[in-house]
Image (cartoon, rainbow, N blue to C red):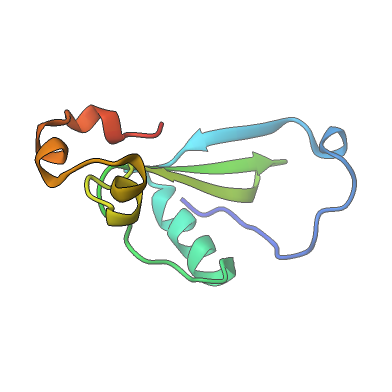
Length: 102
């Protein structure tokens, strides 16, 4: 699937470009486009996201205008775990579903 896009800035308000369509593109033919856009335009580039994740593209007028992603929280994250006050023993018995943010 070939979709054209431009790096030209969008001017105006959302009402000027609506309708905006948001599509989940993970494991679809559009996922390589998401990867390419993030690789090309995100200041950190693109790296494979570990764990469960979702990727979305926002389209206006048939062209992508935004790439978004959400990822599951890490099972073990020392600064967060210390802040909450969890011990290593508590972390091993907490169900994984508690760590997902979306």
